[in-house]
Image (tube, rainbow, N blue to C red; front, side):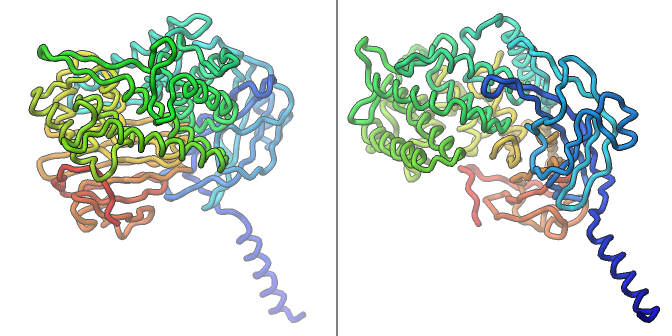
Length: 557
C-alpha cells in the first residue's frame, strides 16, 4: 500500500475512534450520592440515588451510569472496587437504582464514585463520596427540609414557616402507630419537607389494617379519600410507582366498600343503614347567616374525585380495562351529579353555597360551558357579598385560594391571605404552586410547570426546591414596567413555562431574544402570556411586564 494511502487510512481510523468516544462534559457535576433501603416482598433491598448539576449545555438527559463502591478510598483512585463495580448500565433515572454488590452493613462507611453517559456526552468521574447505609429507623424520623422560599410580603413567608414548624411537631408526637394523621395535608407538606418515607409507611400501615369487606380504618386517615390522595402525592412528587402497584388492590377494595355502603342506582351517594353519609354535610356561619352544603353533594363529589384518581393510576400502571372501568364510573357520577345538584335557571350548584360551587368547579364536575357562570357566583360571594371573607368551612377552603387564582382573581386570593393569622385550606399549595409558580406535572417532577400569578402589592417571590431529579429554582421580580424571572431546570427534566408578555419579541434570555436561544420551545400565546417549554439549564428571562387580563388560563396554539 502506498505511503499516502496508509497515512489516510490511519487518519480515518483515528477519526473513527474519536467519533466513538463520548465527549466529556466537564460542567456536569454529580452530587448527593446516597444509599437507601426499602422493603420489597418481605426482604430488605438497597438502592442508590444521585442528582446532577449542569447549567451548560442545556437539555442534558442521562442515558447510562457506572458506579464503583469500595471499602477503602484508595481503591477508587485506581478505578477499582471491592464491593461493587456496576459496569456501564443503561438507565434514564438517577434514583431507585438497585444495588447489586456484596452485602453492606448498616451505619458503616463506604466510598463511591460515579460516571454518567448522557445524550450530549459523558461526565468525568465524580469526586469520591462517602456513603452510609442507614439503619432501619423509627417510622417517625424527622423529615429533611427540601425548600427555601421568600416573598415580598414577609407575613406570607412567616405563615409558611410557622406551618412547617407545626408539621414537624405533629410528626414528633407520633409514637409507634399513626393516629389522626391529617393526610389531606400531605401535598402541602411535600413542598417543604421530604415526607416520602413517612407516608410510604403510613400507607403500608393502613393497608395492613384493611378488613375483609375492604374497609380502611378512619382513625388514621380522617377523610375517606386520604389514602388515594397520599398515593397520588407520592407518585406525582416522588415517582413512587411501586407504591401504586403494591396497594392498587387495596384502593379498589376501598372504593367497592364505600360504594356498597353509600352508593345508589342513581349514582348519588346516600346514607347507609345507620343514616351516616360517606362525608357529613358542611355548615358554616358568617355574619349571623348559616350556609349549609348537603352530605349527598359533598360525598358524591369526593367519590367522583376518587374514581378520577383511580382512572389516572390505572393509566399509569398500564391497566387499560381498569382505565375504562373507572372512566365510565366517573362519567356516570358526573352526569348524575349535574342532574341532581346543578340549578340551570340560576346557574349555580344546590343552594348556591360557596362550598357547593367551589367543589363542583375545582373537581371538574362542572360542565365547561357553565364553568364561568359558576365562578361568577364564587367571585360574587367573596368579593361583594362578604367583602373579602369566605363563607365556607374546611372542605370549601381546600379549593378556595387556587380556584380564585386560576380564574384570574389572584388579587382576591391575596386579599384573603393577607388577613390570615394562621394557615387554612389550600393556602400552602397556593403559595408554592401559584405565587411561586412551581407544580409537578409528571412523576417525580420530571415534567413540571412554572406558572406564577402576580398579585398587586407583591413584587417578588422565589423558591428553590430539592426534588429527586435535583434542585428546581424559580425567582421572579417585577417593577412598574419591567419583569425578570430566573429559572433553573434540573438535568433529566423539562418545564412548561408561562411568562407574562404580549409577544415573544418582548422577552429576552440573558440579553437575547428567546426565539434565538437554545433550549426554549414556544408553545403558544395566551392573553398576556407566552407559553414555552424549557429543557434543563439556567435561564435569565427579562422583558416588559404585560397586563394580564382576568380569566381561566387556556393556551391558544
